[in-house]
Image (tube, rainbow, N blue to C red; front, top):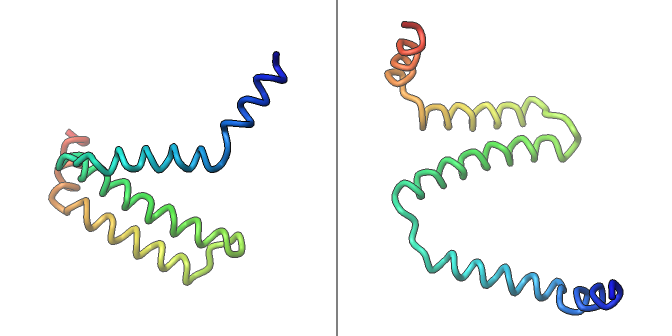
Length: 99
């Protein structure tokens, strides 16, 4: 019985079948529209993935972050902080924490 089950799974679970299932899921996702809030959350995720990719690129080429790579990462971090945190918002957060 176990051998039959294994044969059936191998017969129907192929890379092509998996690709077709993923493509079908992608079509369903593409048919939907994201709300404004969902778009905003996805933008946060995109920024986080950009930062993560910079760290990964830096480490994967030689296992270290050299000065040039660090400068690129620093610039991305600075741009992300500038995008999301204003001086007034930071000041308000500090005031709220230190009451």
